[in-house]
Length: 223
Image (cartoon, rainbow, N blue to C red; front, side, top):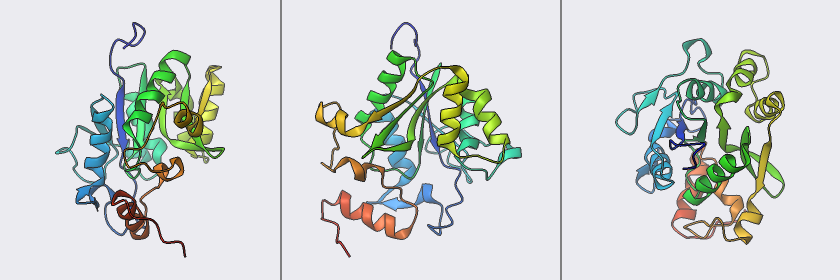
């Protein structure tokens, strides 16, 4: 780590969703025989960080230290876990990933953290085919007051809150195009998946089936 960031950044796995579309707790849903929460923890550890779990609806402390959501903001989306994480970190920046993005490569996390440190960005995210992705996200802890205001408002869209936080701090909102990172050899998928598939959200049983197919190296059927 650089002198400006002597401690490894904190890393938070967001697991506070209600999992309605999955029909069971997503964190404990098995993909390839491994739960999504274990896959998320392994991803964070592969990037050289120790995970913490924010907002879990059941006890996941067997997998990593847990951080409950603010009881006044439960069920209000990922901003709840993000604000709890930023309020309970001792590092200048923190990484946030949801529990349902199991196909992300660890190298992407490493690169995002490096860029955030070098650029001193308030927010660092990526884009795929021109579409900005909300997660993974690296956030400066100074963004907390603005994000808390968004959480307290009627508009709790995380990406809009990220943009507003960067604007309030007059600091960069960095968007890194995945395609350029791949072309430069900075990031690659261990399963050799194209970048667009790295961001498959496992929200439903159908999504889970797609992810199983991709991890097994089988082509997806086009219907």
